[in-house]
Image (cartoon, rainbow, N blue to C red):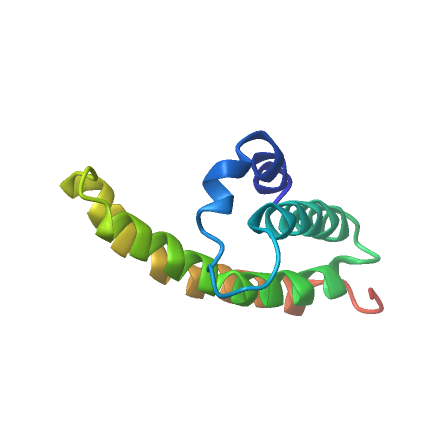
Length: 116
């Protein structure tokens, strides 16, 4: 999560393009907000006292970014300059949100009793 958060600030234009254009405001605002969220979730997951709530919020985060993943897929599939490998990756990366949510929920279940 910390690496993902960093990438939102190091390569923001990549993430900006994945923001669905129907959302109000600037794409960069969403990019930075999700970068900050990724840092916060990373910190929450790192500490046993906050791991349970951090894992719950991480699962919600992975669900919340599905529209961006769909937009990224649409962008790559409609890009005439994208090769077959990139288009295949566009299709294959989308289902990974399911296992990410599942793993976050598993981390929630495995968090120490009494953690937030």
